[in-house]
Image (cartoon, rainbow, N blue to C red):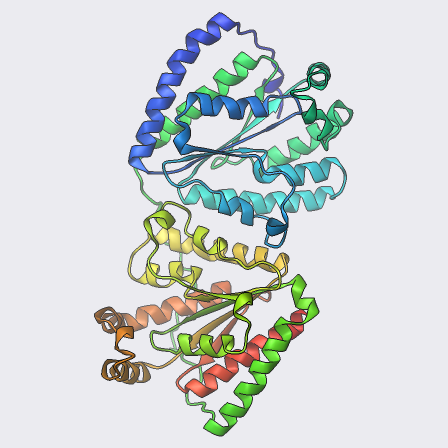
Length: 491
């Protein structure tokens, strides 16, 4: 891993200044082309041995590039707000938009690497964390991001010399005083952990570039030229998703599916509905105020056929809840800002803190439903989304989030009746559009997409609950009962 990075280089100031002017001009030209095209974002991670020049590299980037489109992140110990959400939340929050460059000091590797060096996590657990990061970076690359990761390498003797010099200066000694790695005392541990990190996560879509950092002129030129070459190469590539033709589920040759086998005739009488509704609403309110819930959070996902009653079910869920503790998130087509980020970005941003509830009226499943059926994304994109969604929900669950997902199902005749009722009711007519009627023409395509969604994303950790919703009373009570039982089981 370090053979090339341990080769000494002797570049003097005159050579550096000569190369620097050319490199700076070409980097700015490439950046302006990137900004104008908005084809992809650039994510740079700078990490390395203590004293290797990570801070200097971040400073140089702002000197060379147009800093209006460069954002630098040096995320240290998670804040209280960040600690209340899944570990990767703060990194999702700060992802650069297409056309911009995000530079991270250590990035999502800093905390796991430090914990491994300090022997606070086993080698096996460290590797498991790295696998999660690898899937995250694969998703970023699949979404079009250019991911480059630099490891600034130093020999042990050179590191000792540099750290001693840093400790003598009032301007830089804080770097040594606040270091968790203990400088050259843990040189071997850092080197071994970094080797494992680069081996596991250094893939073709997000490579590690180990750079000898003893000569800072060489380091700066090497990083700058590498970034330039990568941006120029990506700008020259046509944007085209690779075709995927393998089937993802078995065909329903006898017309039996998870939807067709639902008993939509189930009903609940009005008096029973009123009694059970009140009982479950009160029970839910008590659970959300339970002291153990303060260490958890709740995510409710509502998907379903048009006019299946998602809004009515959500209102019954929130009716007895303290408005300060929940937020209903409703999603339509992504905005321009949202389209400039990976598709999961806008959902990560709305995850609740501990003790709170986030309700999603439509959700990340739009990628494998409406975007798939209507052709709003490439086939390769929606096919890989199943695995990315499973990773997303697993991360939430591992962070203490209770994830409950509902598909509200009605039949085609019931939908038609509800559409007509909406058109004839003054305060409901805004809910029905020509688009709703048009979507009925693709009923079978949507049904097939729903079955694939359930088969591929209903896990033991985050299962789907299919709700027979032809009778609204029955559906609302089933939703509330499921929520209460799942929270009780989790607490």
